Image 1 (cartoon, helix red, strand yellow):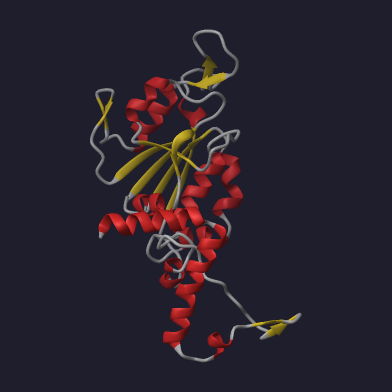
Image 2: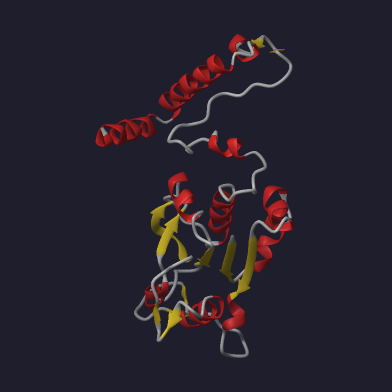
Length: 242
């Protein structure tokens, strides 16, 4: 899978690309992450990518032309006659606090693409006319960050985990919180007794059926305690299907 990131601050990705699962996936050729500096697509010698907004108001706005030129270079087959052709295997995403709130369901949807292009907003956002080339706006939460760089890393990390081969044991991904609509069940490791706390006997029994039943029950308990809103949503979904 290929990730293309359009940003004003490519240096922010240096640690991200060289660490943990992402670094291993890149090394093994499972994913590719290309960082594009938007200033490389500016027309003037000062590499200007922003300007004042028309009408009174504070802050600067990212110009449409550098973003358009970057998209045209990355996916020329989709950018034609100043309009975006129907998406096939690529998706263009603008990271914005106004977008659909990102969750595990969205990560699953995005993991089906062969290529994802992320536009990292900054300042007061982007020129409204660039939205004709954007498939979707995505937000990682109802708050405002300085730019789209951190959200892009969050989304890339979450989506990458769902790409076959990135996580060594696929069942680890399937047990993650939210994967099946519930939070994860509790985990324990050695020693069996630590500061008075004991590992539940069922986990020491070797009975896989009972362990599986215990984990399912605990996942429900944890979700009900910590995120009852998720459990209620899950119940409504089941009622609609039935």
